Image (cartoon, rainbow, N blue to C red; front, side, top):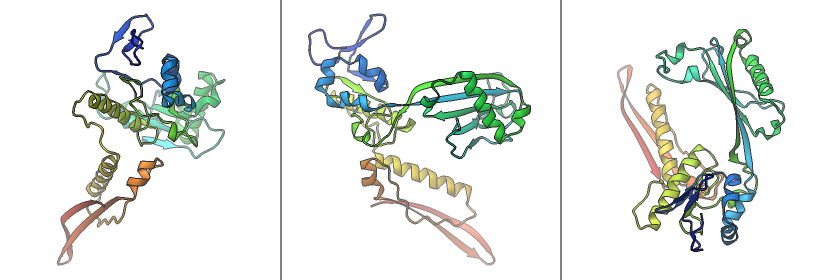
Length: 303
């Protein structure tokens, strides 16, 4: 909402009902570009090219399918994927009855429940003319190709969720169009996986964008903030956790990891990735004919 005084500043939001909500510190929008653009005053778009450039971030549509069966059908598998075929609908499948820990709302352990299978259809704009019933039929057929038990099982319930924009389409040239969280319009910020986060568009990027937007807002108000960790720190933490998990699961092996080099497609990833080195050293001491693992040391170096 533009200030009534005509000041080039965001003062709040106007709801569909016409109610106005005034902001105290600023406004952070988490709407996707195609929903946000029509709501932004034209004066702001002409003033801030990065906001206008959102028009070029086209949506990648997405369909999530959920099927409840009357029995187990996935043979204990939690997740599986299909090899690429241009005629397929789904990319990967998940049996949540094999994934969820503990019990459901009724107290029944998830492991004892019949299969609840979810699947993902990426870039689903190609299926715009397909009905939900047709999507379910094709998805069920693809499940049955992997698990014959699904041929015998009865389908109890189904849900088809159509998501207009899971991510923006990351085609050539779009990386430089991703806007910063702080716009040139005073007190107006944007957040979403499609904004500039130095991460590929993803759930992780969406979460990071919220931290970055909050940091920008608070810093402008003179408040200390640093909730968004640096990209290098995020990468190092991920490597540390991964290596720790490997060591915990395979203590009987001597694992030596020399160099780990990680590089993302974004510019900062190429700068940081070449500097990331993970080194893991395991020392074993031999006592007579037995090998006892007596010392475990994990070293992480960032040059």
